[in-house]
Image (cartoon, rainbow, N blue to C red; front, side):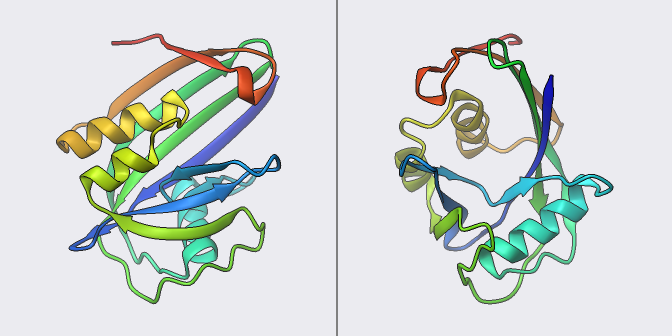
Length: 163
């Protein structure tokens, strides 16, 4: 069983919420919050700070809190994904796209409508929590649990396993 751990960051200011465009191997683009894979020996917060800086050039001196977690079991692919999404207390720097992995190819601050537009067609485990957050932030930590069925990314069907 392959296991992935990912950390994502909510960076928001008067311009809106920062989203990044992730260009996939097949040329498709997924919009998400900035973040990435947590490497062995790294905490989620360490990985998140590193990934945000690498992908966007922005520095986050501290994270205010954990907002939600996501667990996805990719049943036929024998893989799991665990995600933590944290809210930045503040951030600084100039927005510069220079992802060493070459995945993040663009970034923009988006208002509620812009976020909704960018999430059209996104994986349910990305779109649903972020859509809920944009509809009205909350102070507790929420958990989203999904099972994804299908053997190729283009075929995946996700069902939520918790209310």
